[in-house]
Amino acid sequence: MKISITCDDSYEAKKFASLIFIKDGKETYITSILNVVKNELVISLKDKSAHSILLKDEINVEKFADFIQSVIDKEHKIVSVEILEHDVEIVKG
Image (cartoon, rainbow, N blue to C red; front, top):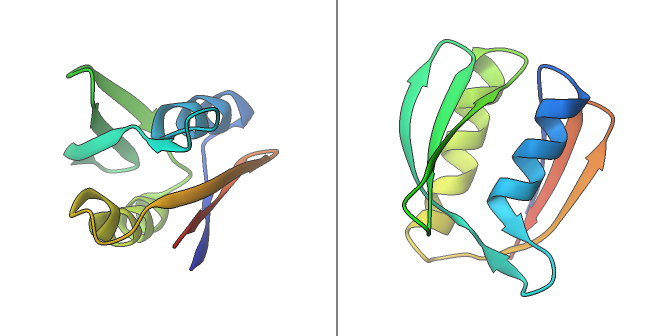
């Protein structure tokens, strides 16, 4: 299953991609969504740190939250993440 999430800008896209998936170890790093405030997503990582990511709009936040829930519940794994300007393409399997 593949999804494309649009971030506020290219910096946020790079940050977002690096926080949710570690390519070297093929490891999903996000453990939960802590908060959502309009287009801002606050996520928790395996190291217990929290990070804020600005997405384009509330629709993208909701789309990502729905998509990532099965990964957080360990039903799926993220297999790849690709950055395309302001968009982050995420594939789970």
